[in-house]
Amino acid sequence: MQSNEHNLKKIADFSLVETTEILVKHQKLHEGLYNLTLEFQIAVGAVGPTPELLCPGAMLGVSRIGLSETKKEKANHHTVDAAKVNPAPKKRAKKGKS
Image (cartoon, rainbow, N blue to C red; front, side):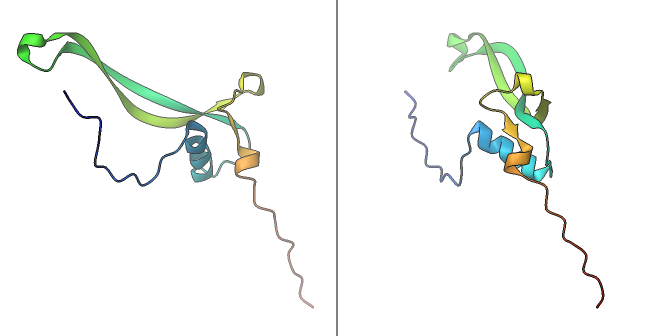
């Protein structure tokens, strides 16, 4: 039996909304509604712990993470409003010569 304990040192973990907020900021988006998108790759074949115990199976992997713009009527609890999490910088008034 395999152990579920791992000796990995966790640096950080993020929720789906936090990941979306990070990507919105990274892409310098200041307006619009966004959801996180995941692209998967699926492989099928014989899987099992030993050749004698092989059975039909599938493997699923995440190949890409991105953002998709969402319409207001399609927004949900995972939707991020760029204007709230990454507001546009305020323009500074130009100083005239005195």
